[in-house]
Image (cartoon, rainbow, N blue to C red):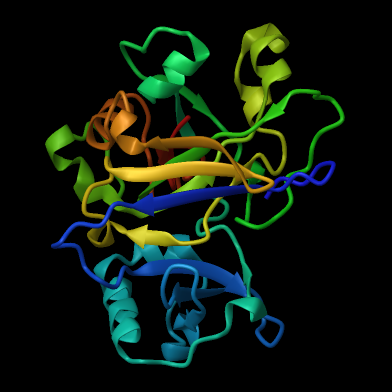
Amino acid sequence: MLVSGGRRLLTVLQAQRWPFQQCRDMRLVQFQAPHLMGPHLGLESQAGGGVINLNAFDPTLPKTMIEFLEQGEATLSVARRALAAQLPVLPRSEVTFLAPVTRPDKVVCVGMNYVDHCKEQNVPVPKEPIIFSKFASSIVGPYDEVVLPPESQEVDWEVELAVVIGKKGKHIKATDAMAHVAGFTVAHDVSARDWQMKRNGKQWLLGKTFDTFCPLGPALVTKDGVADPHNLKICCRVNGEVVQSSNTNQMVFKTEELIAWVSHRTVPPIDASPRLAPFPAFVPGLQVS
């Protein structure tokens, strides 16, 4: 959330349900709890629900999301068994949610990728992806405070879809792109507009990457739980007021095209970052704002 003068920011990403979509999404999280030592991996029992401790179910599982994703189907199958096992659920009030992916190698971002956002800003729709990045140090948990830097007077918000890359690749074809995706999460692309648009030669990097400028999560929803990533309601509320409301069907460049385009110019390794920073973001990896 963003806290300043009483302002609180909440980002929301909601899938439009389809008849054939699974009724129970696999919602992976990283969390902490007072009775546990260090970060743990878990599953949200449902959207907004409590947490199933995956490391208690199988102590051999990694305790970080990046290590979990690196092991691919072997660890995902354990998580599926845990979801079906009717295990005890930690109340949501007793856990602290971390970003679903932490310390990625890269955060690759795509700007001006929503048609309605381009119209709102009165700028032309891009003819090719506009790529920028955020430092991994800007990533914080979904409910952590965003620190407003005293150097900026124009901090702004943008809710984003983040794409989490779970398999390394280079020169990927668009038709093969989804095979590299582990899942999706929600991101908040916080920006210092004065540093992005007026200072530092109008380069975007500094304006996008102050500490805490990339809240993520809470959950990484595996791709089999998202019927259509390009039909997701996405909105942002400040003090209960909706300040952004859109749909990922407004994306200029779709997920598959972006993965292919970026993979021909940079390598999104498994520990690359999320953009899971604004969407499209790779988390680890590709982000769009």
